[in-house]
View 1 (spheres, rainbow, N blue to C red):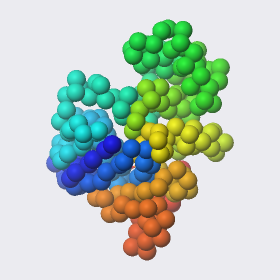
View 2: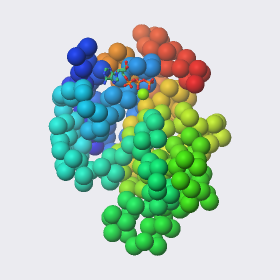
View 3: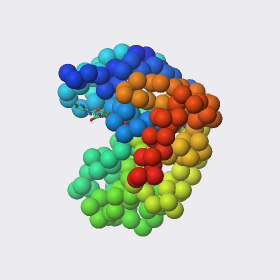
View 4: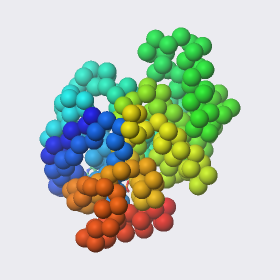
Length: 250
Ligand SMILES: Nc1ncnc2c1ncn2[C@@H]1O[C@H](COP(=O)(O)OP(=O)(O)OP(=O)(O)O)[C@@H](O)[C@H]1O
Ligand SMILES: [Mg+2]
């Protein structure tokens, strides 16, 4: 599904992501942990061609066989939303402030040729699934941060992507809502369904959803293995503790 080889994101001061290689199989669920500033969001952005202007991205990322490092917007178009989708750490930028959220979730379906009524029915149902029943007519500014995060999740899911990349999708949510979103992620990803690459500080979340864990430290991939093995590795205790401390802090 995803093959990453020697992926590097560089700024003049040095690499933010440093020679990272790993692969994700169809339906596989992989967690990404590491201290704040370890390069998790930079990694995710580089994978999805979303690195903002400035840093240089090198190495190889193949999405279902298609090389995407350096790919044009046109080359990304058939992939974005339908093969890969992102739930960003800061959902603010994913949403259009001037469009009601129900309509925003329906738009990708309309673009795929789904009839207006059907698109709206599906969009509203998806919003209900993420716990936003009855809020489809609101504008993003009329929702809380956690509610906006869930709209972003609905937007990511609406194209039925085969790889869902989620950067801290639940860290802004209270515990009850968090549980609902995790249940939803659990239902829509996994063997036979979408693959999941999940950045999280919450090791309980990683343990529950993921079979494999990647550990980043200073932009480098310092571990990649079954969740239980990585969490039990004494050489990784510091890095894992840094993730855990952050989860408590937040
Ligand atoms: N354009 C840039 N130029 C220089 N440094 C940058 C740039 N963008 C990000 N960084 C730095 O890159 C490092 C990695 O940032 P990144 O956002 O990937 O961290 P993270 O692991 O996602 O952290 P968090 O857990 O806090 O979200 C940070 O030290 C950050 O300050
Ligand atoms: Mg981040």
